[in-house]
Length: 161
Image (cartoon, rainbow, N blue to C red; front, side, top):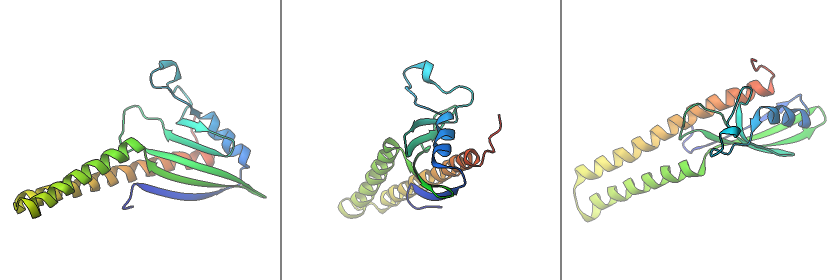
């Protein structure tokens, strides 16, 4: 389990760069959440954008999940296939709220420890800050594991129709 909401991996594939990006492009759709016509249907597994050598995607979900990772990757061609560099991170909005509440709770901990000595309140704020962070990291790592599994299945052609 990572201590920061970030993870990365490097995959080596026998598929060429064009094949990897082509397969990824077939199961990825750019989504405008205000337009119902762009919502995922059928074979779409990822929301996002696939470029000429990189991609920025996230797994399609039926319900909202704050800790869904943003998958950013780059594909480089090699003589026998390709190398895929992948970074998993929290979306910027989720990262902002995690940092915001952690800082607020730690500030209250400092306030109740040094300025208004009430160690019971300081302990509660510190425990809440730690619980907030641990829960966020648990759910983020769980979603990374799920997204990684789907991505690996796509690259290994193990998708079920």
